[in-house]
Image (tube, rainbow, N blue to C red; front, side, top):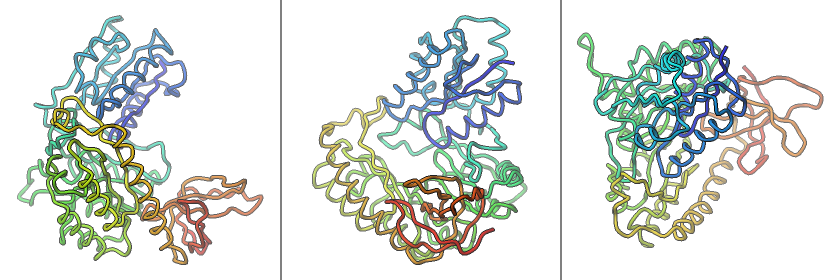
Length: 450
């Protein structure tokens, strides 16, 4: 029995694909071991979103070959697509597997071993022409309560800073019936929460053709169908684009009790001039209207976002507009990124690149603002009844707790009595938030459990 080890870099979509490849190899007879162990095969699902991600991908590939020079090292995913020539010339890589061909991994390995090849077996999928969705499957994940489910791939937006449309291709959607079938499988294995994710989730269904006279399927149709699956208590959505947040969309979601009021609404900048240079397809006013609708139909929803500091041409005045906008929206969480030049994108060729020192200072300022917003959001929950899906036992200051998340993705911890080893994993607990146990964790007092 050959041993295989897998390592994932990048987004939740990559994580899903890595889980799927792991299960394919298990079914093909491989013994799965830790990436830190000696293995016959190392599979690295690479990321290429920034130049730094490319470098990390190469480092992991070289680390694998160094750990066992006689192993077969497989480079899969986005780095393969964006850096084909460099990857093909890398002596640490034995097999290249592009996006849309990961389902062929067991066969490619078998062919490689049969040929007893010591050279490079290059396979790069031309996703610019292959528009069919690559059907991958999982029946379990590394987590025991929450499962991420890939429902869409590719992006048609071509933001000026982003390489992903070149790495992932155009929008391709998974058939609704396939998504539902996988959710049913996961529910049967005890998972109570699913997260619908994709490269550009808001585009789900735009490429699907109507079948048997029915209307085209969109993201809302998919959500409603997943909502019907028994055993699933929570549905969480991946990153959304502001354009999908209409009155009809939000009001429909609010009528689905399994929907988690935790919405990651991509922003990137709170300045219209910067958004235009980024080739984002909305204005700050349109974004703000989406947030207003979410707060109209949901009680105190968690609204989170991404922001890039130091985008080419960002002046002090533009940064000040972004900072003011973020405070006005008053987010629960903000993922703050310093602009990272990515070769192959339009932004990399723009004038007025911002110095690293200024990017860093702007990020620090926003981070301080975020701490205040985050604490304000958490304190709103004090004294209120919360429902928490428990996930793991943790220790804070020498005392044991069970930790989980509310529907808003707020962390909450329930103290465990001394001497009790009760396992609350995957239990839905209702309790009252008594205080802030830690900076980002609410202390819970138990009221009910299911």
